Structure formats: structure tokens, C-alpha cells
Length: 229
Image (cartoon, rainbow, N blue to C red; front, side):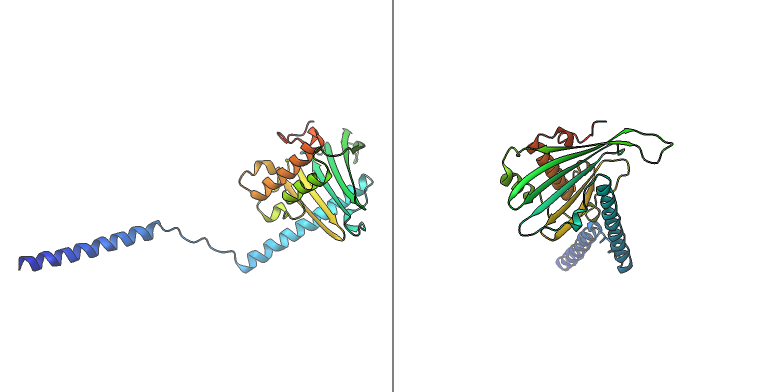
């Protein structure tokens, strides 16, 4: 009789312990995050597409201001390519454009600088000084330099807006245009060095640093990214 009672108690305690263990396991399981609705996804896609369109229009206007033809409409053939990296300072007072070309197998690079010399609030357009400098051969040679850019994903990086790089109105920004034969792309990143956990932002940093190191362009701020005023 006593043995029967003991066995019953053991079964009861065992069942209780199992229920407690299951409850604890359930309580520590995180709740699944709700997925975006189809409507929210559609609205987000529209927003990204609208931002891309505005970016293209803005770069087209800026190109015209400094005497550059729109890269998107340029005709390239065979293995020709052109890369333009725009660096916009936080206050727009010193903007840079790094231009890399490969035409009929010949590489070249130039740096354009557009500086606001004097701001006059009474006038719509400030006094602007523009200059252009032809750069020499990169330290590692053209082919190795180009391979470094490819490994940093200069041709394939998505737009920062698509991967969580937040737009910052008071930060410097980098816009990249690529044209390889007839294929054109454009994307931008705002203060990419501050997005430590964002893989694509850090790839953008690699691209910037590669250009700065290969051509000894301290103006591209490879160490601290803060444009000199």
C-alpha cells in the first residue's frame, strides 16, 4: 500500500516538473516580429523609387552646373567605363567629384572641386570657385586599384536607402554613379562611417578609403571623414 502511494506521488511530481519546464521554455521564446503588410511594402517601395528619382534629378542638375554631361546619357562601348564619386560636405561649401575612366583600354582619373567662396544671402546663387586636377597613376597600378574597388563592391552596392543607411540632412554624403558600357547605376550613403553595424555602409567606407589611399587624397578624409572647412 505504501509502495503504491509512493509511486503515485512520484508520477504526480514528475508530471508537474515537466509542465514547469515546458512553461519556462515557452516564456523565454521571443514573440515573432510582425511582418510588413502588403500595403506597407508597396508604400516603402514607392518611397525608395521616389528618392532614387530625386537623386538622379539632383545629380543631373549638379553635373550641368559644373559643366559635366549627364553620365546616364553618355555613350560607352566595348569595355569602356566611367565612375563618378561625389562627396557633398555637410554645408555644401566644399564638394568634390572623383572621376575614373577607362576608354579604349586607357585609364585616367580626375578630381573636381567646387567651393563656395562667398555666401550672400541677398543673392540666390553664391560665388563659387571650381577647379579640376588630373591625377597620376594609383600607387598599386590601375588594374590592382580597379580590383580593389570591385572587391569593395563599387559596381553592385545597393542604395543606402534600401539597407538602413539613414538620410542625415546635416551630414556629408557620398553619391556614386557607375556607367559600364550601356549599364548605368546610381546610389548614395550618408555618413557611412557612423553605421558600424551596417555591412554595406562599411563597404562604402572601403571604397572611399581605397581612392584616398591610392591617390594620396587627404581631401577625401580616409581617417576621420570630417571635411576641412
